Length: 472
Image 1 (cartoon, rainbow, N blue to C red):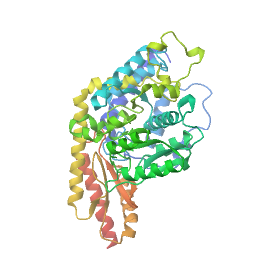
Image 2: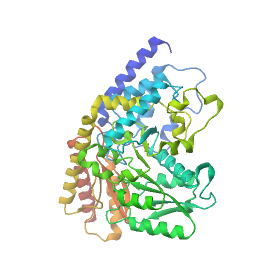
Image 3: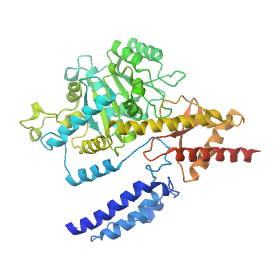
Image 4: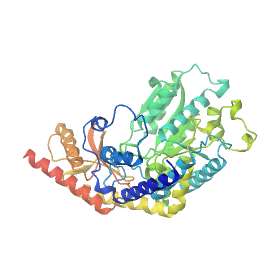
């Protein structure tokens, strides 16, 4: 492809992208296709000779697009937000154009130093402690794994194995902790049998007293408690663990304390919501994802640590071919995480922060919280809907209850969710809380406005009423 062709199709694709970002709501939010339907439309072997971009882009529109779930749809209320923004998309284009491999300062000095600066901005915006250092990982799952690996190395004395490598190490999470912690425990070599699931309190936050009892029991059994994972905004219910109480327990037992705020950490940008991070100063590591609720397209996970040296000692490598004369004076972020190769993720974060400003991002978050509060009021005001968890952020957990036997309510709400999503206008997901099938609605998509939330409530209510009438 020559320059003229690149310009031609570049303009065409950017025009399509601008139209899509403006009008994603015209598509069904989730595709109605059967498994294998897209695959059947694709050839079983690649072309022997190159095809024109016009044909490739047409097939994108006609074959790929109909099978896409539209996370940028204003009716997206499922899972969690995964926002992009025009500024972030433009930065991603520049990142791809540069094609830089940003594993060390020497391979891309601007990338390393920009990452250091924007993570410093984020630390200040969230009110994290002075002296904490940040690095961009791909996802919160990777950040949590990095925390578990660092905790493992710290508990075993790094190279010296001072505490005895042969003693099993234990990790503590709650019943509501994200599944990535369990996966990380297995990957990091702790062993699933050394993962402790701590009960939660009535608000679904980790019970510190139960945590203390579990740790005491393991210490008496000759095990080494190594790490506890607290959460701000659990995936299922949006619960907030009592960070200060957990932190005190972790400090008393010499454990690593990791805080996962992947979804809800963005809320702490608001002074009135900063309290959700009370106690984070006792943590050893903290993660939140700008690629969820902060207008920065996937992937971009901000991981902060109290002791950068502990992180670097866990991951640093010194092969001859990577050594440079500047290593002692710079951050080589290849040593701050698992992969050697790194994308220039800081660029899109920089574009977003400069384009919207802190107040612009706060305004979006405040509006989402207002809309969530409005939806909460509608649920509470309806005689046959009930909330199943406290509402801290934009996530609401509820179910329809028309007074049929408890044993039948799970099936009723399962059918209700299917009916809601069949509309094609909105997309919600479910979880299970205290054994009850629970419908989840998350307000957090960049283009979601009050009319979209009202439409969701209308669809939910009318679908529930229809199901109830069918029973009669």
